[in-house]
Length: 355
Image (cartoon, rainbow, N blue to C red; front, side, top):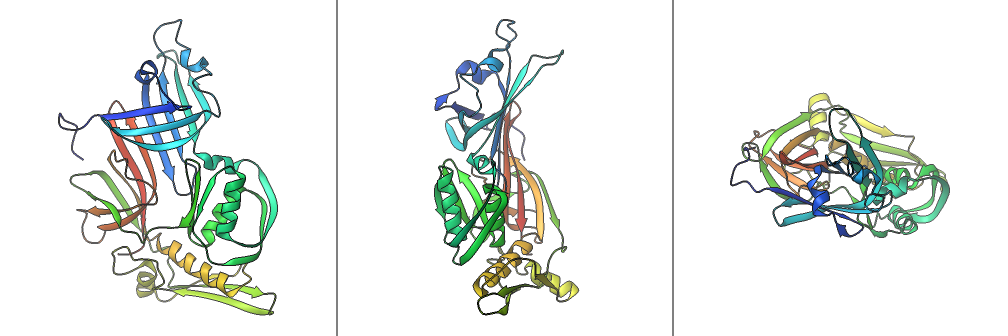
């Protein structure tokens, strides 16, 4: 990544608290802004603000309940000059003041997107004659969120939420069918993992990337998956199967993890016998989902580039300039955007299912 120079745009940020832009005075005291996004965890923001050297006002930010209070609404915009993009909308959940003898007091303000509301309190209840997408939509409505749920296809006679938070429960249901649970502002998205989509950008090692650290591992790769269950109505065994070739996409590669594993070590079946299934369609769906989720662990890693507001979890990026084996498409699973006096950088985690 090239160093900053006169032609490099200056990073900017804008913080809105309860729909009001942070004052110029307050913004001038902010020393760091970060936004962390993840396909498996609630999105989080943090900002660090330093006190003034005026003894009468050094606790101004710490004691200002009108400005920073638990439950306050926050929007974070990042970017360059007047090209700002909204990256986070959520709620303040924590305040962390720091008092040391060798520097001015600081206050770190933290908050999460509205997924955190789904993690408050455990429930035990049942859902009858519903698809997983129907369950996600119901839970979203109960949390005061708008649901945007992709039809999951299979209707379940009975689903038990046993001593789980709504968030834990939704993640479990999503994991079974290779879906994700994401909240954007007040909308809960329940949709398939999108590693089959086209890339939204290309990042070149010698121009855009400060770091690129991929890890290829055949551990956990299987040539096929079998899901076994019992049909209580017809009193017979259920077997759902998937195999190499059932991947949603090979992300521009020629050999997926399942095929690579079989070629190198021979056939190996991933057997799921403890996963509750009661219908053939459910077993088939889970088998394909497990093959896809396992394959997507073939290559994992992290990278760092100059700040990109369009680099978001759930998107596919293309990496160039790292050789043929590791060049190509990668699915972004997490991204951390940080703005400090040193500039704006984005660190992201990725996965790939093929070579």
